[in-house]
Image (cartoon, rainbow, N blue to C red; front, top):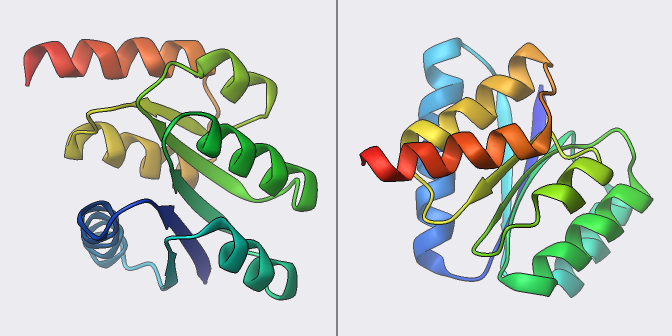
Length: 139
């Protein structure tokens, strides 16, 4: 069973990510528990007690970078999809993020990140950012 934490800045993002996660898990017959957070303080308070197996971090700018760095330091084994409006692909690679997406996030690009979790493949962060940029040009 996957315990997925979603850390976002808005209700709109939260709805998008939880719908995508629910659809993906349902299609693949995966069981998951999804917890959503809109504040880092509460997120880290809860995750210190119950470590997530997977996390989606979608915070703006340096807030996202700080959250990913802190999560990685606390739980090196947590699988992470990081979504940002800034190109942090080199940081994502350094922090061993499973998938980095440059906003705006498409359903297809996010689904590829989810597939990386399930397939446990970890392509380089820079190629993921390039692919996401390529996807944006065609959507």
